Length: 316
Image (cartoon, rainbow, N blue to C red; front, side):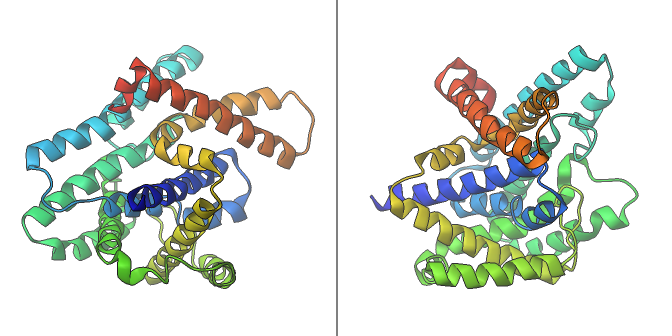
């Protein structure tokens, strides 16, 4: 029962992050965009680190597992989107080149795929640092990743700079799991505490500059990390309260199948935006309808990719 409850709240937490991502891609305004980018991608690196287990796999087995779970979906959905793009606008080699090299730009209708290679690199680098007992290298790696896109003339391949920052978030996730019992209070805030910390965190997010891991933008770096920590504590506390209600199973379902939502949300959103562009209605109403229908379509697609032979494309 304890394991089920833990997985439920983590899936709910992941589900909240996916909904924030979808809303960001739909476009709910600059204020909302500024708010969610402070935490919604960092939290996924944290979650991955939360499930890391020291010494559970050998090097080859670990790399093989990550290739299957992250790179197979990356290649599968990357080329699916490319073929779709060629069908609509004609042939161009540029998206393929970006898919194979610098993928934080130049991927029309598939921009979110950069996260898969970033997480893959974070997973492998962290595993090697742990295996070689040199986790102290994480701190300089995080600093290099934080400034690489501002200092270097060209972006690093496969979102490597974001992967380096992700190492710090991944490490935080592992530490949080290791000391889970000692962190009970900060991960189990009540509604009043959530409200107070939420107001403070929101204020700090807007005090900080615009954050975007894909673009290598972190604002004032210490404040970025403070905001990430506070947002994660809030997100986990909210997720646990959601799980206690016994409802919102659909939210946990989103978390469990998050990779399908990540890989296909942008093409679904663009199709729905195109459909609603023919109907005169306030933008907020149109965006809410696109959000609801996007989640419904993505739920259907997640069932299709997890319950049929198509699961091979998501590394299952």
